Length: 181
Image (cartoon, rainbow, N blue to C red):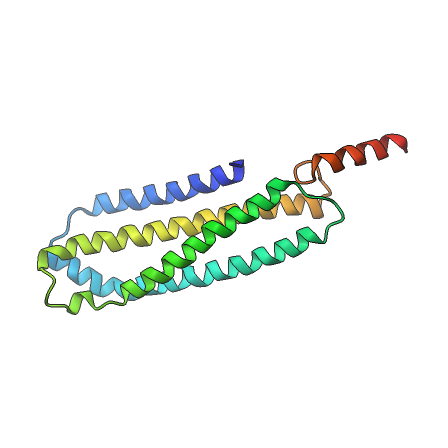
């Protein structure tokens, strides 16, 4: 696991901690209060899920661009670079699927149902809060992972710093070529 990936996960965990503290500070809700909060927040939850779905799809498209840029370089890039791209794609695809699933679930008319006991609404409210927090944190992780990869590409393409991204065999060839000159 790279340093950028560790930092990305740490960023997501910090976000979850902040939301957890905020939830703890607000205290416990009754079933009726939770039902009212669900009614008020459902539109925002749907917007959040929709935004995360769109962001995830855009990030996947950007990863294709990164692959194109990577394959067009004259240098042979390290295996870790491509493993990084695969890791970001896996996490991003998971976030995409989970957000789409939650978008559909949040559209169920839970607050209009007469079959759900009043005391279950506080549980449903906290579940929706946890789900939206995890989805948001997961998107933060993906964006921070993507940021790490962009930094590496900027160093390689713009600043010509190759030691962190170019395969070691090619680095040795470049060093020998520089010694001969």
